[in-house]
Length: 122
Image: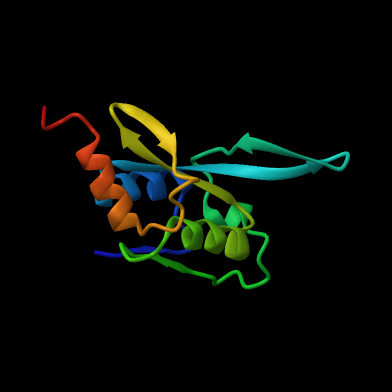
């Protein structure tokens, strides 16, 4: 099952749909702001839509998130299309870990690993 995203959807709605599709993963949206030559990352207001944050010239940009997409590809799509930093976290023994080391894994693989390490089957 794919998640189809357009500019009218809120960040909260994306996070919720992502959570429903991949229950052992979660995404967080961050704003990458340049301040005095340094990158400062901050959380975004979740009730705003993608259109309100979009830095893309193509305001009709859309994105399809599929289980076969890697974490790296997902993060790059959000940066390219919307100028938003997205981080994916995986459940690991009831702790949410950023998936930087395994960013080449697909979302499906990440979710399976999160399920295996969630402690729910214990």
